[in-house]
Image (tube, rainbow, N blue to C red; front, side, top):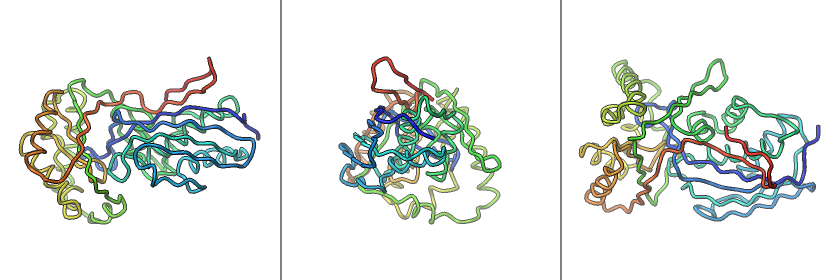
Length: 315
């Protein structure tokens, strides 16, 4: 099966924050920090990669590049000959900070493949989520990167599923990003294989409440973001993160570890409250934290042809 060659597409994908406190491996939120790239399918077997922006020096420029691998994965799954690629990327999502950078790279590649193959093969939203989950391993980060907003992700008989929800306009996110990083695999290794029934019930109640808080009642966010399944067990590996989360929650802010950390996500119940949270952070820690005042991204990943008048896809 052949595909359209020498086509160029532009892709933009948001950062994500997974877990949101009690929603471990289930809940994710898309945030208005973006990786952008243009990708051209080449007639040759060349691979050309240019990267600027956050973490550019860390990005592989060979066949191990995650965007390239994700594009080729789609082609291989569809039985289409792999193209050469020219990838020009500008990244704004911090790497290794719990903001879904690897998931966003996977989604960028999946969406680039969708655009490059337009007219030769069609990929549904379910196809995109399945392909992205195959590469990332979990749907909780790739779902909000693909679809935007607040997503609930789960796996049903081996097939990843999602539900997108609209977030209440009063929810105002703020992210504190440190200079240090945290390995997701290391963070996962710090959790026990079993938890008490009491802790499991606690998180079930808070996860249910969190859906209501994020979609209807932001004033409930502090109670709704409490957690007993993962953050406490990881605290020793991220003492400054734990210190900041504790101080912010004591001051009344719905602060959680973003993904596997070490960034901290605050879901304030109004835009003005975010500046108060910054003041709290400045007062309780001497660790340098970059504060990012962001919005919830409602659109998710976007791909469009760079040819004038050609297609644009929102998922």
